[in-house]
Length: 466
Ligand SMILES: NC(=O)C1=CN([C@@H]2O[C@H](COP(=O)(O)OP(=O)(O)OC[C@H]3O[C@@H](n4cnc5c(N)ncnc54)[C@H](OP(=O)(O)O)[C@@H]3O)[C@@H](O)[C@H]2O)C=CC1
Ligand SMILES: O=C(CO)[C@H](O)[C@H](O)COP(=O)(O)O
Image 1: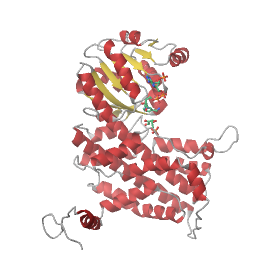
Image 2: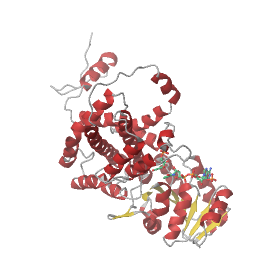
Image 3: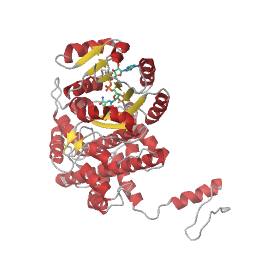
Image 4: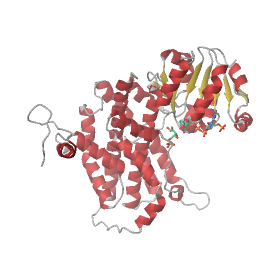
């Protein structure tokens, strides 16, 4: 009898199965399409404590009680379908785990549905891509503590490790795990977009080659900007196309795909009324990239005036390093605010510092900056968006001049910098005592009698404007 079953042998599932087996647990595997299972058996199973099954009944029967089944399949309808297939085969107290990038409201719904049938359910955020799945991902489990206790040993053993411990912790109640994973991806979109923006400035303003940009990224990776995304980016910059010998990145079509988690993050920020404009526009960066033909056509119609400003290469590169730090800090702070508010509204009871700790290893947004963020969060647990901390403010203040110069240089050269601009405008808004929302309120009252408050006396007011 095996300790756990992995259902789904795609990129993630097959690597998770191997990872768990390498930690000394017995694993059963099943995949909907038998070809994938056959390939897994042929290529990966030799010498592993893994049994493969071609029918779900035998797969389920092969598991120790209470059974633990880890779904690693495409999110959405396939998960509902698979749950329906599993229900009649399971006994009370068995556990289904969904490790996919599932929409958190779906997780809540499934949790309630299965609870009524006496089954346990966990929504586990998994991050780390293919190599993380094999060598140790960051795991964000959410649901009941009773369900988590059944698999805590396996999840902890299979997760990545840093000097702070395993990159797995119980994240919180209900769909907390999938909410946090969604947010992780929202920040991932933001960090990827901010890196693309500095890349764009380096290639279009400084006219650096991919190799030269790779050198800059590699140097930055040795400092405060150290991160997984920075590391893969300098490797990407140096990769040559086998056929042409040109930098591969220069040959890749500039249309960025997406599977939904960034969009859900943006939607959650609006639903919860928490400002996360930089995470929001990072999604639009990808959306706009898709209109290649339209962009191509318009680029020939609008003349871009050449800039006459003199730019020092070293000074701009140094400013870009600071502007990236500023933007990334702001995006983490927007994400943390959203996480805190979701925890309050949905009763997740998330410990933010613990989440940041499990993001230090295994996951796509692991970055040196997390140490600073953890310090700030631990200093004052009520500092919901980090900006209540002098440490945070001095970090931003020190980089503000660079941020302004970078966004101005981008304007000057027609380089779109959605995330940089919104990060700066977010901070400008948050440090502004008097926003022009007074005019907005007056307009609303003018056309719709929506009323307004005044700064000089208490009450709700309406004016006959004409
Ligand atoms: N790739 C990544 O970096 C990461 C992915 N994830 C998430 O993990 C999940 C799996 O991703 P990944 O391994 O990359 O995906 P793949 O596309 O490699 O594999 C998809 C898996 O889903 C299964 N599947 C699809 N439709 C159905 C269905 N109707 N019924 C049963 N099984 C089905 C496939 O089975 P079949 O072979 O039969 O089609 C296959 O096993 C997704 O939710 C993804 O968002 C999470 C973190 C990182
Ligand atoms: O979860 C992930 C990384 O953390 C997956 O790689 C996911 O597919 C990334 O999202 P998208 O495909 O929308 O870029």
